[in-house]
Length: 450
Ligand code: AMP
Image (cartoon, rainbow, N blue to C red; front, side, top):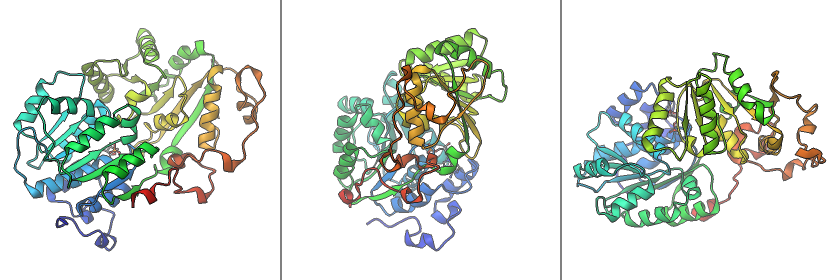
């Protein structure tokens, strides 16, 4: 095993774990973290950084917002800066695979920030843009490559990049890569990397195919399971407005007269819906931009930049496009259309109340969306309080009535608690969950991996 540049794992429990100093990071990294005003490592950083320094493989059950990017970026930067491996054109030493261009761009940006005082080169490659600049960067030589799977394989085939020097491989948001149909590409990429590499796999969920992938590619991994912090969702004030589909536009514009809604992320279910809502807002004189998968890469970058800088007060996005984007200071999330997957609701509202801030989530629910609300409330095991507004229709009188199906069918009888979905990942919203449910694993794969 390679010598650890960090404090040994067991020693960590003897020193204070409240600062980055205790993790044994080199000075250039500590200074970069200081400049970012990161005072304390997050739980995943505390647990992961020393393990990675020991050269261990890792299975991280964690999602965006836990600080997982720094959890893998810092040890990678540290290790490469100490190893000082010679740089070969087109042959990176570390490879980070991410499902979307946005996430790849964000990870690259973080590597740039954390590693700005280190003599390491980072490049990012993704599809949807001309490959020219990416090829040029690869030719100049990179230590760390961040890539989406499709473009990476493309450039491998064209021999602009080779992976036989990759000694650290990270698969970020592996479940998302599966959802997006990249799993074969990922397997192919893994097979091109060195066999004695260190491999890290991060995933918010552990569907059987990801458990199998983890089993196949990780070598005796340590499993670190970081459930989203309880407080994050507790800090979000949630309200639902029962509103006719045709009244949603007026309701949104009316709510936006409240200037405390200063950075608003509006969700729709479809790309067309996002365009339509954005167009309507702009027509009404509000500064809004749209973000979804049909937009060209430069239009997406422009939209995100406008939203980040505050030039656009409102970003209208679909779930996939917004996945993983990290814009600080979002004051309100508006579910213009409720998601048909209840988990998406938790992802959506988690975009606000970041980094200790308070946040608000406002949901518009028309008659056809009541079953979606029902599924969301079941997952969260709590009801969302009803917002009052002159444009909103009278809410159903008692919470029980909210479980009613549209068209006046009889409400389904509530299932006994033990049969309801446990939603381990969203323990943060299971306010009434029995404490014994805490930490329970939805997919018992530990046995497979150890
Ligand atoms: P991630 O889960 O990697 O997407 O990180 C979520 C957000 O937390 C990003 O905006 C990071 O810059 C920020 N962050 C990560 N680690 C820390 C830390 N130790 N202290 C404060 N903020 C952090």
